[in-house]
Image (cartoon, rainbow, N blue to C red; front, side):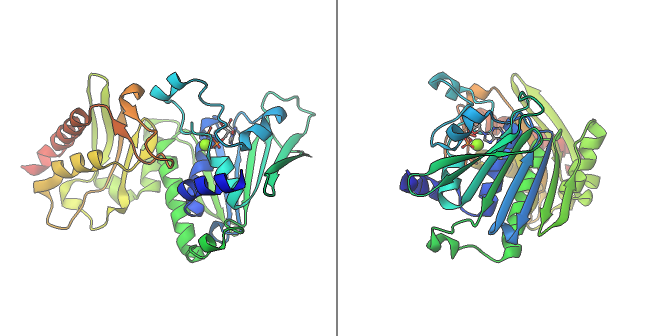
Length: 330
Ligand code: ADP
Ligand code: MG
């Protein structure tokens, strides 16, 4: 199992920020309201994610580490309309094959005086050891010494600062996708980012300013358009506030951060004549559509999506964005 998992890890775990992404998604799927991320040495030494989600029962701990074990879908039919961020049951198995992983949890349903439990996968057969661990309800995943047993990959880790920046970027994306969740990020023991939960529209706006930039939010145009079951809403930079890097381009599909060519192309097309050459827009856009009309099971990282009617989605977005920009074009 170790080798099979390491091969799968090659696709899922590219660098520390990919571990952070998978663990954050698990915490969100567990209904967490507060998530704390502790990083040491750019994630090469330690990545610890603490959440207050529903937790995992002791009997399920070992299963959670097994490959292709997911509690999120139970039949093939479910794959047609995925409502959770995870569904492949690959992340924990993959990560534990290339790092020292401890999965600790106390189920919300567990009685108060019962301890939590830790599961540690080890060795070539990836045997799981279970130990008691007193903790509050929720889950703690600790990933130490990433790539310790795959030296060729460890060598590809970049400078601590670079890996940290990727982690911060990952957290921003997840935070933008989940406005009602509070996040704290610590690096080498110091709090580096605190993103409170947004409880109203106004707070949500402030939060986007704090995550992306207040400059962006100040000049941004608000957009909210629906046709049938398609809805696009969010904030767009007005054409005179273009930038020269694509760093502040965020698109979410049904709450999932994606990088999708169809969507990027549609937005770019709407801006086409309005921006000087080489300049790009900034945006935070949320697309909502029937989960059956979008396939998220395209790649193990789940960054890519495939629309059953890409043309329709493309034209809808292109038109909605163009309309939002219109008064500016006069
Ligand atoms: P997936 O998310 O695709 O189901 P993972 O390997 O990421 O697969 O996780 C395996 C299983 O472990 C999940 O289906 C879930 O049941 C459990 N799990 C993982 N992380 C958490 C968490 N933070 N809180 C509760 N359950 C979790
Ligand atoms: Mg997962």
